[in-house]
Amino acid sequence: MGGFMRKIFALFLLLFIFSGCATVGEDFNIAFVKQIEKGKTTKQEIINSFGLPFRKGIDNGDITWTYVYNKWSAGGTTYSKDLYIIFDKYGIVRSYVFNSNIPGEDVEKLIEGH
Image (tube, rainbow, N blue to C red; front, side, top):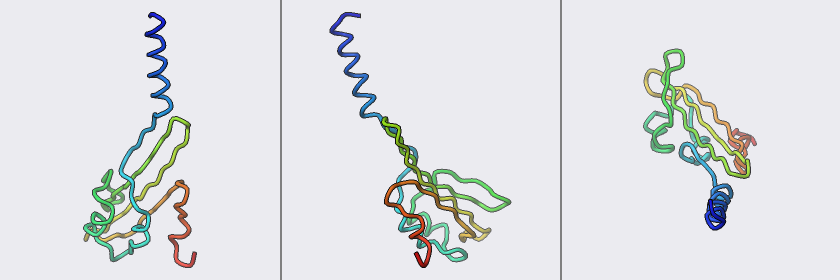
């Protein structure tokens, strides 16, 4: 490879490395998490707030939906949050789990009294 081609290749490689980032899933607003009420919130209300789930499954005979957002940057920083919802046979939220390591998304503030 000639000197000019090496420089072009190196330039593209550097651009890829420094601009490289990847995401999985759709970002969602954690303010909606606080609005979820066990025994009351419906599947349709979840869809209205979060959109369609990233993944669907079954847990002990109950339907589960998972919402995922992961972002990786070339600098090695990884941010992620996920919402795992279990519905009863009537399509009402039985329980849910939310996790996040994204700065500014203080999970404890989602709990009453914090």
